[in-house]
Image 1 (tube, rainbow, N blue to C red):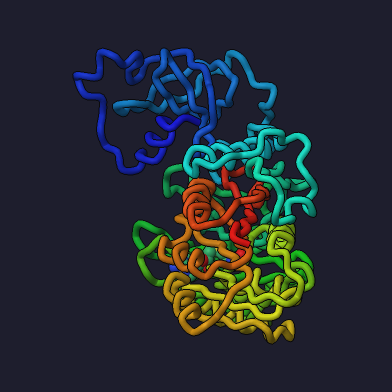
Image 2 (image 1 turned 90 degrees about the horizontal axis):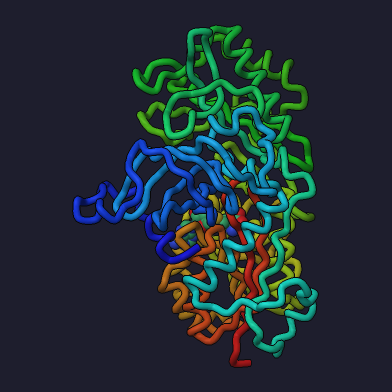
Length: 502
Ligand code: SAH
């Protein structure tokens, strides 16, 4: 991707400008016109990036290497959006989307690209960002990458960053452990499914191919029961009706099932019958909860959760660590790939058992607990207080005592630890999409840990932050992309940085 391509994509949400008269003369396309375009790349949302006489058009559903016929829908000054009318020359990487509602839904963006090509594309996204934003050197000979043990040698030569092939799933379907389905109504009564792309119109859905089958079955059963009992679906426009969302959570390793009914009010008519029917029709259900959300909001959960039947929690494991998951707990949605990601983080941390480790942005303590048995002491920090409560409970659940969790901003808490004399051998960061706070990066550089492990869900902020850490005395040795969300554009990776001063 070129620099000029980044800007339009980023500016899209805020830009309201249209072509000015001055520039109109040089623009080779116009709104509603039909053109042939060559697709030269993939944009941030999985759309094809096309060119017509040097002018950029974003075309959803088109792939690099293709020649397509398009109709221009919308024009901005330097780029436009066009609808795919016909693929004139198809990419060998094009594949038939497996899902019948792929185009309506928008939850996945890359199903029309073969899985193998998706993995290559995600790695390329990482490389492009490292080079363009981070101004970092990526090793050239990628076919014959050294095995992990080699890159961990701290005096390894500096031939550039090793960006490994994306670790994908052998079966990239049915991987999600949590389903959150909005409930609404059509002529036939209560429905539940997804919001049609770019709208708030609910489309009924019985199956989602990236969702675990168990969750699909649970949601279908609850919808059927709610219809039978005449439970009124919520109406977003009038704020009337009761059932807003059905959430199903599944423990991949324990088989435990949680059902959460999000309701616009406290009272559920026929409550006992409802619970009885869910228990009967969802074999193996271990927890049925109600969450009350009476606010006019798009946020799914309200503040109050009640257990209607069974346990407060379901359990699942990542590696040999057990986690308690409540109705509202954050828990990684792809447990299979999470374990692969964390194993890579553990390997990159290079622990011998003696180290002090800081886990910044620790969530419910998953990485902290995963590393704890390999280190002397772990400190975890996370801004959401409830997540820290979960983290402490999970430490106890596993009998892990060498971890200390604190609620607060990483950029405030870690400098305070530093002032109190905490010395870190390894710092792990796993920030949200906006990346690490600048003050935190400054403190990390001051603390001079031997290694930094950077888990990232956004290659552009990763690249920005790696540049700062490199300027602060670190060398990025390796980056391993891991496909956490097959068929979507999300690119997750874990990077290993080593302090150059040792
Ligand atoms: N490491 C965890 C969670 C990563 S998601 C896991 O693997 O499950 C990123 C986390 O950073 C979220 O839990 C979010 O609440 C938290 N967060 C966001 N801004 C933060 C800040 N300034 N300081 C600390 N935590 C923050």
